[in-house]
Length: 416
Image (cartoon, rainbow, N blue to C red):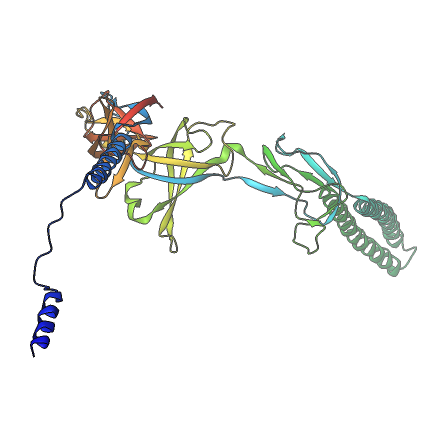
């Protein structure tokens, strides 16, 4: 029994008490060194991040905010995009199908109305004209013969009447002579009609011959040469890969205008005769004074737009068809009061304004740091935007600010 009690006592000493707290460990010198190194590395990383994100200088392009002129800039009430179009443009063709014998134009040539720009093979037409002229000559000869016969019949009638009066011939001879005169008159009248018919045939053959000469319908510039010598052209699309529909395309440069599609929700801001400022994509610094010609009274159901025609107040050789253009519809000066107040705000490049959530913001350079400002926008004038509040005249605004630019970041200015 005593041996069993001793065993239980020994087992009780070996049992682990889970509720007893663990013994406190004393930190060693190695543990302290490792912990200090980790803290130091974290501090260095934080410092580097702060230097790169706040202390590093970001190169930016800037522009000065311009004060509004005392007379006020023509603010835009609506901006739109469109294309230069020509009201007079024609692909010139002959009115008959034929083989091209000569092409007298090249792209870029200036032509005048009625100028010959091409010719077709005209052998058949010339032969037809010669035949018609021969038939006219024959009809005219027969007409002369009938006139001579009528004159002779009239003289015979006079002699017969004289013989009847003297009772030398019977009344029948006079009647026969009169009948002959009537017959000759009818034949002469019929021959006159034959001459007219032959003359008409000559004119028709001449028209067919003239169709072989292609002329410019109006004064303009050749923008496309569509046919070569030896090809067949036809006024109709006559199937086959070797049939052309014209000699070339001519544009009347004086008829150039701009067509834009305006969202139907904003068409109430556009009026006929309204001033417009047009900027070609090819020449972004050239502002062309323009005006609204007409609003086409129909809407495009698929795009929900209305087409507007805009006339160019300046003609220039640099303006060519199908060029892209941006237009700004300007406020009507007539509706402004005579004593209009000086406009508020400044003008900044449109590229300096960005949308951030529900706010329009501009970054201004202050003490070599980017300062984010919420702004209130006004109208548009070309590539400039009116800022009513948030920016003062003479301040440097950042143009096309980097997407990750933060408020307070250090920047290096470069003028745009």
